[in-house]
Amino acid sequence: MNENVKKYLNLFVEYLQIEKNYSQYTIVNYVHDIEDFFSFMKAEGVDQVQDVTYSDIRIYLTELHTKNFSRKSISRKISSLRSFYKLLLREKVVKENPFTLVTLPKKELKIPRVLFSEEIEKLFSISNVNEPLGQRDQALLEILYATGIRVAECCQIQVSDLDLTVSTVLVHGKGKKQRYVPFGSYAQDALERYLQDGRQKLMEKLSPSENHSYVFVNRRGKPLTPRGVRYIFDQLLKRTAMTIRISPHTFRHTFATHMINEGADMRSVQELLGHAHLSSTQVYTHVTKEHLRKIYLSHHPRA
Image 1 (cartoon, rainbow, N blue to C red):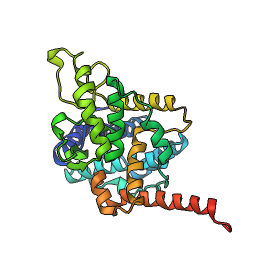
Image 2 (image 1 turned 180 degrees about the vertical axis):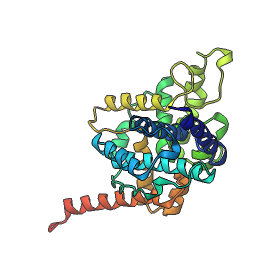
Image 3 (image 1 turned 180 degrees about the horizontal axis):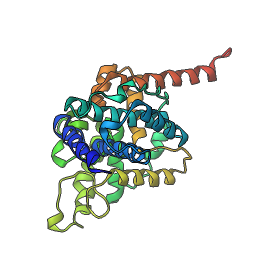
Image 4 (image 1 turned 90 degrees about the vertical axis):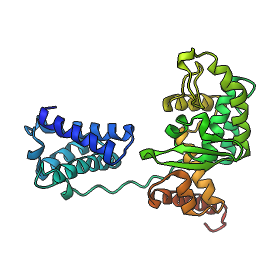
């Protein structure tokens, strides 16, 4: 990447960090999208941010389609570049934003995978709660299903974020936004058992200099990562002998769908999930409708 692009990309990163207050994960994705675009542009003989035209973007889009990128991935890349050029236009680096002319492809409406009650029961009965790792796994399952928080948010929970007297957790969400989320008695019991026993035993493996206050830890006592959570889920799923494919994020979908099925209003679910826009939450009404449709087709005599 040449100095012209690098200079303005650094400016964009500062903008995302300071003005937009975006998470590091989001910023990395933005940077990757922009670097990918200008790598392609360089091969096309365009190496200045000021020289990119609508025609160049059309060629890039053709390349993405040729490589079978999904509509969702293409939309994200174009959104990243549009934001980048919006800043360049504001700073008078360019005279126009060529990405405003690009129409984003319609998103594919995918119904999120949701766990049935029987599947949840199987997963929740597999951990050996007499062992430290089993206590951790059970607490992890319970808190994810009880709150619907994101995996990354779960890994960031500190002991001080938990208030077990009123069964709530302070969640540090996207864009450094915070919200309080309640949890029920099952999660409460699992957390208390883990914090009083399993976590303490796992933390003993750390040296004094490595001490920390993260709630969820790995077998060596170090903070658990989102990748580690996914590994735990894979192992638990294998032990249940179920053939379904799920991820930790499936619990978020399941939480939201079950809440709406039981009569929770959309605004409350939106707040619990930490969604900035109600449209993000409304996808779960589609899940509910699809579930009702399957029941109808299975049971109505003239379906």
